[in-house]
Length: 140
Image 1: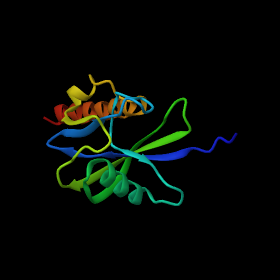
Image 2: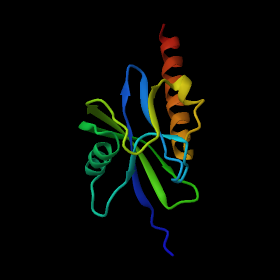
Image 3: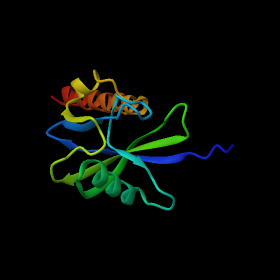
């Protein structure tokens, strides 16, 4: 058995302070939980290539740009390392794999039953948002 991690990309797509998340199919790992869309990279596939492929397959979205990695997390109990990457898309998402999807603000995301790594990322987003807000308050 080897300890090599399998890279997974999760697309962080935002619009008007809301984030696109989708509910995992019941028969999959973390079934019924919400996640940022994405998936495992194929061997020798770039992060950008994987994001483009996964978003096309899962949500029928065209990727306009792939930005920086905002957060990385291990998927406890699995050999995956998940990178949450800022992505700009065009088109209207259409479900092909997930059971439902939605655009949610941080106040709602924290209440959703998220996959474990996605929950860690949302905690990170909240802490970054809190830091920004406290800096705004100090400069007012």
